[in-house]
Length: 190
Image 1 (cartoon, rainbow, N blue to C red):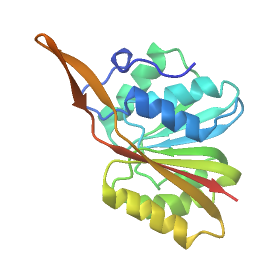
Image 2: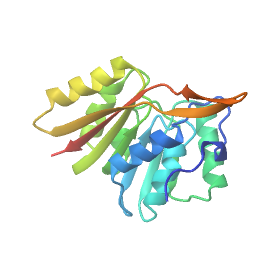
Image 3: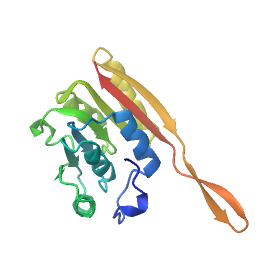
Image 4: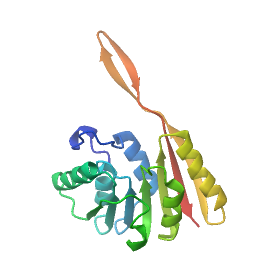
């Protein structure tokens, strides 16, 4: 089952993919029980943990450059008793070349290096493998789409925009509190 409540994760001041976006990201990723998964820009490890639960016979590599975030990922792994995640405190694309081939790559943060990350991942992703990129900024979205268009002989892609609002009680009324819109780009290697 996917969709762990946001409040369940240890977070601190580290960015986290919110529950609704995690659910859609994981649905687009189509993770199978034996898959090898990279979670690049893993933040708190929320996506890594949910992916690891979907791939109990596979492995997840949580790549995170922020030492505080890498520590939180380790704490969340322990909290949720997930054993098939390896935390790599690296700035992607560093280290990707040493990982085993991937079936799924989740990219939540790229630190301005998305094109370089996609080029490194391209060498590691299996045929029919999926890359799911969560884009907070329009620039990241366009960088991803530009890369995929330049490699249209190798990849097909689709993009959706998601806007989630939560109702919040304000006195006698309920008002929608909007979260930032996210673009989810799903890329499939041909």
